[in-house]
Image 1 (tube, rainbow, N blue to C red):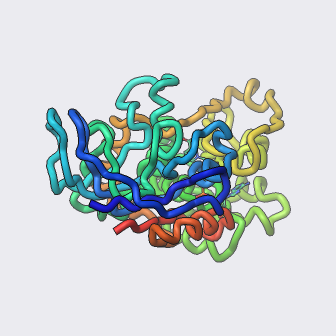
Image 2 (tube, rainbow, N blue to C red; image 1 turned 90 degrees about the horizontal axis):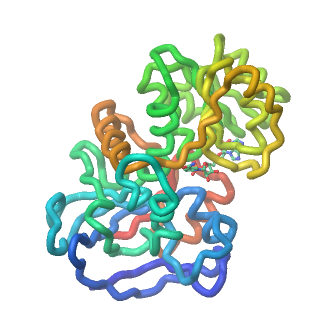
Length: 339
Ligand SMILES: NC(=O)c1ccc[n+]([C@@H]2O[C@H](COP(=O)([O-])OP(=O)(O)OC[C@H]3O[C@@H](n4cnc5c(N)ncnc54)[C@H](OP(=O)(O)O)[C@@H]3O)[C@@H](O)[C@H]2O)c1
C-alpha cells in the first residue's frame, strides 16, 4: 500500500516541504487506519511550516490537523467504526469532553500530537474520528475540524446569542466564514468586515447584513457600529493586535469578545477599563472537544450549513496551497486533494 506524504524536512520554510513515500502499517489495538481523501489548511499549519507556531517542533513532521476520508482497516477492540465508513478527524484527538488541560491540548496532529493529514494513510485512535453525516461530502467534512469547531464554540457555546442578537465577524478566512454561517443559523444579525470588495460578495451571499471594508474605510469600527443598528452582543476577534482595542470599543456592556486569532499580531495594547468597567467578557476559545464536534456535525447537517471552499490543490501542490493562504488570496477553506 502506498502512503505518499508531504513532509517538512530539514528545517522550517515552505521550500522544505518535500513529497516522500512513507511506510504504512496495520492499525494496533483500539486504532483505525484512515485513507485520507481530503485535508484542509488552517493558519496554524502555515505558521507551523514557517517555524512561527512552535520553533521547537521536531522535524521531520507531516503538517496539517484536518482531514477526512474512508476507514480502510480497524484494529482489535474497535467498536464505533467499520471498514468503509466515511470519517473525519477531530482536532484535539485526545480531548474528548470536559475541561481542557495541557495534555489534551497537546494532541492536535500536524504538530505536537504527531504527524498530520498531508499523507494518504493515517493511523489514529478510533476515538479521534467521527462518522461523517450522510448529507455532507467527505471534502466538506475535511473543512470542519479546526475552523468549524472553533467558530461553533465561539458563536454557539460561548456567544450567549438569542434570535436578533448582533454579531461582528472579521475577514473572510475559514473561522470567520463559519462564524458568520453559525451566527445566521442562530438567527443573529451579522456585521462582517473584509479587506476587499470582491471578497465582500461571498459575505453577502452567506447572509451578512452589513459589510465594511476595513482597508478603504478610514474608521471601519465606527462604520461597523453604525451598521449594527443596535448594541453588539458578540465579536469574533481574529485580528488580535490589529483589532482587539477596536473590538472593546464596539462591544456592548456585558457583551462577549471571543478571542480566537492573532492575524495582526500576538501582543495587543488594549484599554482595560473598557472591559473592566463595562463587564465585557473576554473569552479565549481553543477549538473544542469531540462531544462539541459531534454536536456541530449534527447542527451542520440539520441546518444545511455549506462550507465555503475557495481553492483546491493536489498533494504534490501543497506548497502552492500554503502560498495561497499566505497571500490571503482565499475566501473560506483551502483543500488538498490526496486521492
Ligand atoms: N483559537 C483557536 O482555536 C483557533 C482556531 C483556528 C484559527 N485560529 C486563529 O484564528 C485566525 C484565523 O484563522 P483562519 O484559519 O480562519 O485564517 P485564514 O483562513 O487564513 O484567514 C485569513 C483572513 O483573515 C483576514 N485577515 C487577515 N489579517 C487580518 C487582520 N489583521 N485583521 C482582520 N482580518 C484579517 C483576511 O480576510 P479579508 O481579506 O477578507 O479581510 C484573510 O484572508 C488565525 O490567527 C488562527 O491562528 C485560532
